[in-house]
Length: 142
Image 1 (cartoon, one colour):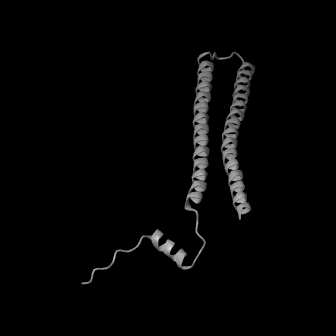
Image 2: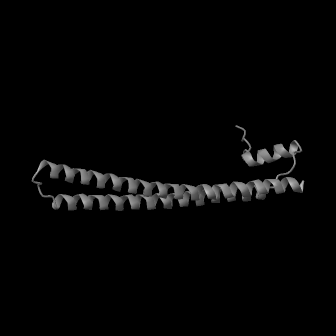
């Protein structure tokens, strides 16, 4: 059997194809540097998002612990009221406090999510702006 020649790598074949067609040469290092910056920006945005998620989960855990502590305190200090009106007043106070706490906590969590998302978007927006400037500079050279 005849021995088959070793095949060229895809990059070698692609390069030879480009030379055969007399395509303009490509500055591979410039392309890699450009994409490296993109990947670094994505990585930085992911780190910011992860840090935001970590702080969000931590804060949610703290809020849950505070809520459970308040409910426990209220249950331990609960004394059966003498009249139906007193019972209704205690239940209404408990419901009001629970609702106010839930609203405050939801607002705080929303602020954390907004801040984390805004930081990630700012990183990506900055990189997009830089990339557009790099493209513009490349066209101006030519």
